Image 1 (tube, rainbow, N blue to C red):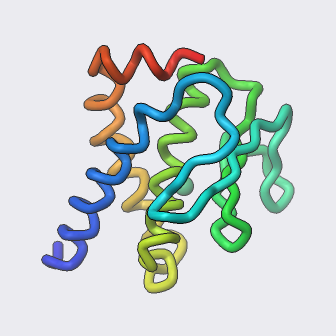
Image 2 (cartoon, rainbow, N blue to C red):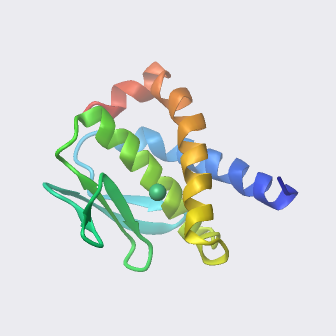
Image 3 (cartoon, protein in one colour):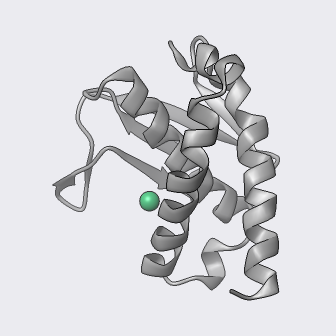
Length: 128
Ligand SMILES: [Zn+2]
């Protein structure tokens, strides 16, 4: 792994963990890297004809999450989409192919979510 990518991953970790405590209560927008992203919960969510759990629309600064899932799964999906949003606001999305970005985002989600999920001071705020 290049030093540049390691720096991006470190920066994303810091940003993501700072954002998590703001997950409580009504959630309509999040400041992600200085950009206010609208957060919308949808009964059913489709991307290019396929039903999905969540999507980050970088160009229109919006994250959509399917509200059909249990709250905990919604929180984890939101966490995943926030990482995508960090890549958008950090200029990383523009230099990565879509499948490469998805692989990195999934890796960060799988490695970071257990850390976030098991910290009681964060977990308490995830239960909306
Ligand atoms: Zn993704």
